[in-house]
Image (tube, rainbow, N blue to C red; front, side, top):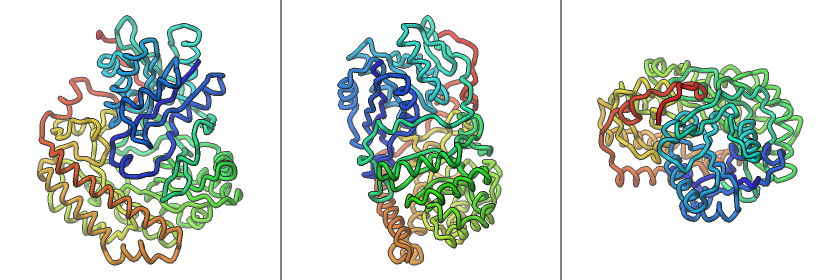
Length: 497
């Protein structure tokens, strides 16, 4: 079959401020198996050029697809754009099959199939095995009944049985679908996004990793390092951005990967996310991190108050957070610390204390995020009674407030966040790291992040002035009466449309 993988343009600040874009790993992960199955596969990536919906539809139809598979990592905030694109595609080519996958449709499949008749099939959960099975059924002219999908049966949204979890993360990535020269990160370095692992063993209430991926798994460490080396030697890739939430969860597997990367001896930089606990745990092997190419790790602080950490079930402590930042700096790596705000119990005093703690932590880089009640997280249930102040799903991107904070008005929460960011980044010590750091790689990284930060900071101010939100419905009212379950693959009873 002629298939087009479609990556829509994303309206989020994180996509529009940078002039650099990483390739869409999720679509490439299903693209490889589809190519290997003998299908003619094309990729339409509207994000780098920020194409309009109309331009995206035109470019997609120019590939003459029999089926279009749509997906995006910014799953919730890109959903309104997906609906627009799907509706126009179906209007211009009614016989096309539109398949939609990702986190948001995996959980909201019933609502989507009821509200958007243009979308025919939803792939729920991992798509590497499910998507080829669906396409095989379509090619044979039969109704797909493969596990892990949702569709309409006699007009009624219906889900098949859950798809088996991929035990081995060895699916071939369809790298041939992209032009590597068009993808960069980190200030002009040729870059791609990859995954060493999926899932997370931890219980943080605001995160859906555990429910969507079901279980933490990792790739073969040696094979993963070999693939990175191949991308460098063949395509000139200079930087790997790990999409994992916790690539370091297994010290044994992670250390094996570090040794394999050192043995490959390629000058590739690695950036990713991890937990402060793992950095502290690995204090004795952090020199291997550096030697393998690791240059920055993002660590989520989710507040510096121990009571807040307990509420969100983070499992960390202030002492470990601060120790991790120090250890990374001692070993020539950057600590990017995110701090989350928007939890119900917060007061002005909490924000002032957050600022003091962050100054004591002395991180190299900081990034703020707003607590967001996605329907697949326990935080959604905890926030059911709270009022939504931003109903535009395109702004549910963690960079816009979406929940009312009862004890602090939204405008003051915003000002606190901007004050914290400015104070941390404009300290003489912080500026010295940006402009005077002796390590040229770190100096380049710090300057690049500072330029990016200024653009994001200004856009957040613009959006705040133009889109002043007001409290409205509660979270429960906004999402409807039915409460979503955390496990993406649970199949509720069939209901009438």
